[in-house]
Length: 398
Image 1 (cartoon, rainbow, N blue to C red):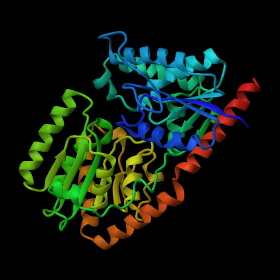
Image 2: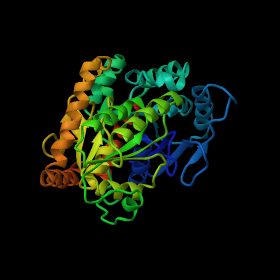
Image 3: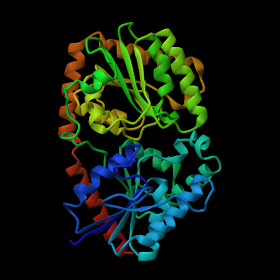
Image 4: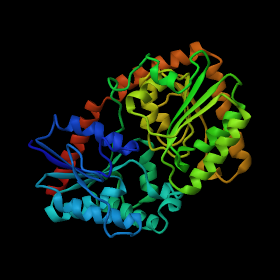
């Protein structure tokens, strides 16, 4: 069948900062092989391959309201298509109103859920209530909801009981194993002062409550003395989170002089790939993660992973085969003793792999093979098109 789709997203390459942006950036080229038209509407600076809408109206308003201003502009720019696919709450308002305007079905992807991220209130203030309302409305009115992991199904229905199971389809995130693959060059790691003769633990991600970076910094005190910790971490959600992390990192530097490195600027993806390749362990201490593309990126570079067993992470990291998982109960986030025990176990799991390089290497090899076998973007695009076709058929049958 002829198929024309409009992709609505806040992030689009080269300006991306999170997993949703990576997802859309990888998905679109594959969809272009399967669809007659793939229109892309995004937010921010003008860029090739998409129509960009500035988040500048109303001037000086809460950021959530400025997103709505961009949403209206985005909805007005959607051309004649057969289906609209909106990613994250930032673009879901545009997706719903554009679908109404053009009389076509709307699909939304659940990269994360606002009710599961209450710390966003620190970042958005009253805008968090606005973003939560937008997401709830979008999920309840969407013709199809894509979950990026099996674990997300229960989360979606718990947050939004009005979303029937039949409207939810699982299409996991993926990885391009030709973009993320082992890079044994040393120019980047050498420039960062990494000692390639000692174990290296790497974290990649934003400084946000969700990523649990503060837990890794605390756990690092219990790492073996020769182990190095490299944090590719920037874009703190709020000044308060930035201050909290800066203080914790400063204390860690004093406790472990010469073994910790914090890279605050966002490195090019090819540089990240080289750092991941030279890591003994990739650490993912997230307290909330619908799937976790960053774990796939590390695995594709043949790096073993130590991660918290939350959300969709266990669907990516096979405990004992491609890495080690550490149990984490979000309901005990305020239990200081429980959190201290989690951080100790996280450190123990890292030490177990840095002390056994053969085991770590075997896990890395298994991880890359899993990426190739289970998470190709071509397969994900085909599954996404199948969801579009079901949504269109259901819409026409009303």
